[in-house]
Length: 420
Image (cartoon, rainbow, N blue to C red; front, side):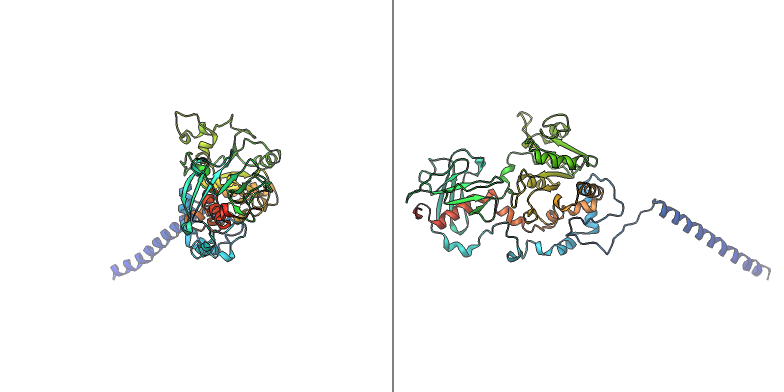
């Protein structure tokens, strides 16, 4: 009886001790949780629309990250390609609907219009000085069984079907049996010569369109791209043609953001071509005197943002300034063509014109720089294969110009075309 009474007395005591310990542990857990010592993954089921330029996916605790690959991993865990594709399903490569695509970029014709070709081989002779890269010279095997010779050599094209002029005016008269006259002007204020048979420029309404999105501008450059992103200096800008209007625009934004300005305009790094001093790994060849364009992409890749401002703001005029930034793995802050979104992948650039003030734009850039998930969203297009009209933009670039021009010459009949 005595032992049973002692056992009955001990049981409540043990229960009280256990309850007290549990309460102390629970209290300690609450303190650790609210102090931020414990941090649990967070996933919001009410993710806002990703198509809005001002929309940002906020990570649980924004911080000034510098590891791009780490930002990708975080984005993968909280968003992922499946969700991004669903949000931009109209821009997927597979099943891309041509009827809903933008009219800002010319369509490359399918095999259905091969019957329009009047010649199986076309030769184009480039006349006079031109900025077109020499490595465009080649013999091309084009669609519809068409072969195309593009050359600056009058020996290789001794009897050309077309003459291409850029900096000089074509002949005022063309007689029957003479080559077709082709004139190209890719500058902002593009103007026809008035005597050409075919006109090449950057606009979709021209006879042959040539966008700046190709790879020919990039030859012989250092393609080393860094996964490190400077977390203190946010913006890269480089310009050596100091157009007053562009300088003023750049100054208004850059005064609000930490930046490195290379080149001659608004330089704040201590001299020209200082990028190689900052990033020696970007040098192409230690034995050659470097030029600024040799390390352009490599230097840009160290920054989260690249400021890209066109010399002239006009519809369709989207130059290499924007595409350099995209190819370098940075997010472009763009001022230029009002229809720029027709030329780039979805959610890939920050269009400065969409913001009511420079202060609003700068605030958005700063918040994006501290939010790895929202920043990684601007790279999702390249990782998830959601390219949209960018497929057409690349297909209409200078890289494909020889075949597309040769097709146009073939449709007219080349030398046998009626003289006007």
